[in-house]
Image (cartoon, rainbow over all chains, first blue to last red):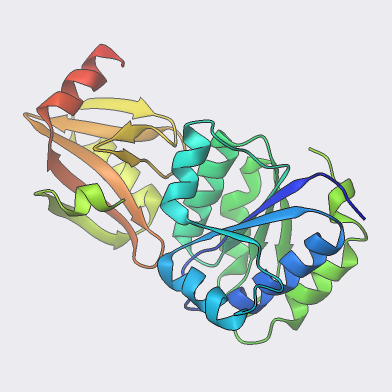
Length: 156
Length: 90
């Protein structure tokens, strides 16, 4: 299946264990729909992915988070879908920034302990949500990812 | 965003939320400019919930600065050239 669509996964601080596994699961799902995927993250978040997927079976392109913001701000690239992983206040700011700089359909993946307040903070940005109080167990969010039959069919 | 971290800066408020940083700047400085996310200053593309307030205090820029793992900070950075750009709207 080839969709010719592109997706960005913007990761936050990797202190919560579910983030890395969900990112790999989601890129595998998106690649299965023929989408080209890029993961943006901090050096530590990207390092976790490199170690988790040494053969690059799942992760295609990776880019430093700051470099990604620069590319978007300078209009050198954009994406069809944008997933922002949010478990703290900084994540909300990155979602707002992506909302301002990109034409992508945005999905906030909200997890951690304070999901209600984070979802509320993001609610004015016109994005979709996958939210669950997940810290160590990725299954609640994995199940929500699975509930969407075809990500590539989503349009802004 | 290494450039600011290599500069001489002072942390006025640290490890807090973006909203508290924005409120701190709006409350404590009279000369304020509002910029969108992605605005480039000190070779940094600003992150935040728009509109992002930037304060000016003599030859210093007062700006919110976000680190994904450490929260939001308000920094005071010397920047006469950046202030000229803010005042001229460029």
